[in-house]
Image (tube, rainbow, N blue to C red):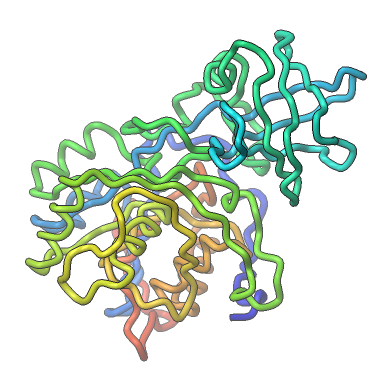
Length: 366
């Protein structure tokens, strides 16, 4: 796949700076690659678009206040974005962090937080990443909770009105450096109506890491080096998924993070077969056009940045040209884009020889 195929022109004024209020009032584009239609709805109508027996898979990772502003002992300022706890560094309470600026930093250097707590740079990892540890008695997680900020993407220039706006309503497990944004649209009411509809909601955990912030830069997308992200699936969730697959029920993934967990779990499984991968670990799965989806039957996602692995994943599911046409439709209809933007429900994977034909638009009232 050529990098230019991930180029989509998004007008700056369509980049959402705040979430819809209420969350479930955002728009929802419903894309059917098999039938060749695009419909327009509101996210609050999601329960009506799913079927009894569907399994909706959410990511319950919670965003850490992972951005920390520190300064050198000489006074120079540095921003640290803590990506994940690192057990490979051989040091207790050591984390992998992205430092900006990073060029003049050196191993062994001390950095000071606003409250005067000391951090030490342990090892340079490349691409601006460092192993960083707390040099004092305060543990790193407690330090982030006390002094850190939620790491909003760089294209959001408006401060959060409420910190919880960048957390899903079902966030439970600390560990992400960015929100699993497809889940930001859910409200307790939508979740309740899904249950009443007979949709089973299952949670997996994948902590969002560095690749959320890294564009694809290689001319051939296949050459992009994707980083690993830690995931965790409870045994009862795996049993539910195995059972649903055996019975031919749909598995609906909420966001690209849930997709990565599901496709990792069933990477080597045949149709309807049980999971083959461990329930706890790290995944480096890179999903792009040509990937054969084994576990995901429908995808609920946001509109993603051009030249990212996230957009490649959506194109692998919906098809390259159908995805491009859906994005063009979203621009024409003035959808809101990226983390706080509107949502897309792709009702099934692309047909091998099909896709959405131009001019096949259907509309629902919004």
